[in-house]
Amino acid sequence: MSGFSQELRQRQTQQLVLAPQLRQSLKILQVAALDLRTTIQEELQNNPTLEELPMEGVAAERPDPDSREHDENSGDRAESTADSREELQFERNFEILNRLDQDWRDHMSQSSGSGSFTQEDAERRQHFFDSLVGETSLQEHLLDQARLADLDEKEMEAISYLIGSLDNNGFLTTTLNDVALMADIPLSIVQRAHTVLKGFEPAGIGCLNLQDSLLHQLIIRGKARSIPARIVKDHFLLLTRRRIPEIARKMNLPLEEIQRAIEEIAQLDPAPGRRFGEDSNRVVVPDVVIEEIAGEWVISLTSDYIPRLRLSSSYKELLAKGTLSREEKEYLQEKMRSGRFLINSIEQRQQTIEKIAREILNRQREFFEEGVSKLKPLTMTQVAEVVGVHETTVSRAIANKYMRTPHGVFEMRYFFTSGYQSSEGESISNTSVKDMIAQLIAAEDPEKPMSDQEIVGKLAERSINIARRTVAKYREELGILPSNLRREYS
Image (cartoon, rainbow, N blue to C red; front, side, top):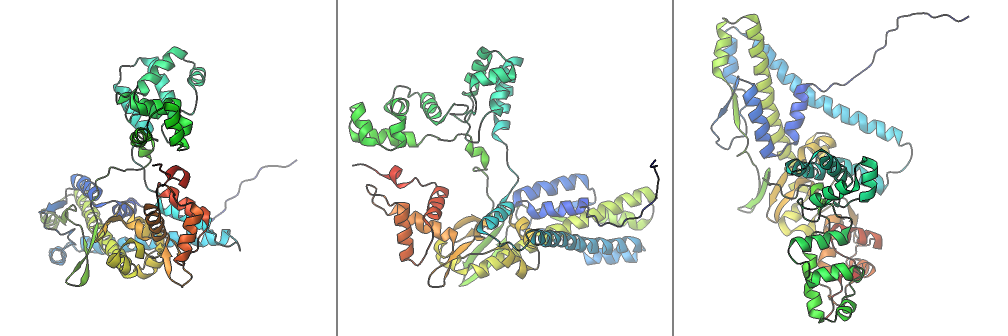
């Protein structure tokens, strides 16, 4: 008969815990200039030892050496030692983060075995770097409108089910009958809730499919009996196939009138819910400005929105007097350490962004001089090696950041792209290839648009050899229709 026994064992493990200050430094590194000001204002409200100086274009003020000397002369050597420990901990935090990133990379390389690193692996990895925190979702936007509508409890329940059944385009993925059965709500109530939902913004939301959405948008515009509405309602299949002459023949209308109607349909939103997939209406404040002045390229960081901070001398003097109780002294010392860490984090953020921007300028000099067509392949690993940080730190530093250049304002991620090697040995980024495809299509004959295979041939003439499916992929990413849908009839 087996029995039970108890024993003591000692096991040594390593565990990485992100301290609140490290989380704060990562947040400061990632946020854009406008959001950083909000973060700093929150800290100013919670930390009485911090004070904001008048905005003079200076991002932050490091702890004044004179103030430290004053603290030492006043006998508060314990606080000075704490300051040194705080700065050392600040540096260690970033070392810990880089070590964590390196351990993760080593783990992934060991887990992958001897398999080669494929293009699909590179795309998944890039997707990880490009992942950002999303804005308000479509469902949240619609639920906010539903709460303001005059709905009873059952109707609110029904419209919540309907909102939860929408796809990314804003269309229903199930029938009203199915919603009524699943929610155990009378069909008449579900139908009323659906009518309310279709009245929400954006126009065309909550419809059954693309045809229903386009027709509903025309109805909202007061064009229920117009030619565009008749085309969508009665000849939608021909419309999707761009059979314009056949539509004109069936409707017994001139070709020019049908063409104008189709142009009006093209102004409608084919996917009203997709705009909530990304923030397309964000106020952009460039964090970095690169411009040519007197024949030299100059890098400047935006600091107008970043408060200039310093530690309050009043609280320093209060600590120096030695009249505070132990609890009061510990509280102020903790707040002052937190304030110094915030100031250091802001300065570290600005220095990291500037180093990355300088390396982008060095490696993409031809882009700044000539334009998008000269953009070269560039990886975060290449920049990280020069800057002296891990590639994930580069990813965090450029997140939500924009750069103003002579050719416009670009997200800093724009400059990091994979590419191709031309037959002449020149490195060309995929962004430049997309630009070439867009230029070729813009210059084509509208009545005889080029097929994807013909575009492959045109690129090959420029010593760029890519597959037809790659051209199709880039064309779709540019929002350009295939050749049979681009054809225009005279």
